[in-house]
Length: 287
Picture 1: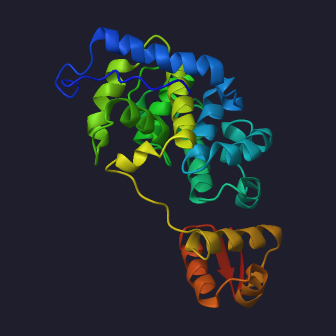
Picture 2: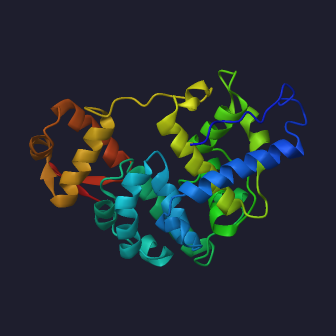
């Protein structure tokens, strides 16, 4: 990566933020990096709103490499809203396995059902409509609006946050997203938000590898808790064995997962409450 330039000045945090020359220099730097090192990802070579939606839900809290392993299979199995809306949970979880955070799969199917029932199988384009759908928060709504509909939405994700902290807040700590968003808005390429946000994200991904993570300066930075022996791991293993074979008793699930019996019991109850599994007699199966 080229040596970092510092486009911000002492008055960068005032009402005017950046000069036109600073904005131009920043865009040129980001686009130059994108031209040389931009990633060619399957959800970037389509403008199909459904496929972009699927990629954005998958990318929540999940690394690109893991999503690449599952995205094509998912789209092949559930190519559109009708097929996803009618997907049996057993089949849906079977395809989702390996991505983790299985609630996203349930939310995605619930979203597809709403789209079929209330929107004529067409995904809304406005962020304020998107954010009302299951599994879609402020960032995801903005990302879908930009990537699927070329709308100049203003949003921050972990890679975008990393870029702006690195470039404009190098002498600061405990930086809130509310401080970053005005920079995102001022530097946004409104003529081509899709390319601009892809470029920002790719630059941020490289920064993570080549620098001490600038996001540690963010007020929103949280170190992820260990996965080993966590409830996330237990839940994932329970669902994996039940997708492979149902029904199973609690004792059989404990043996097949190799996890602590108390943790298995606790997470079986949670999975039942959340609509993943059902219990009949002493046996558990996928809903």
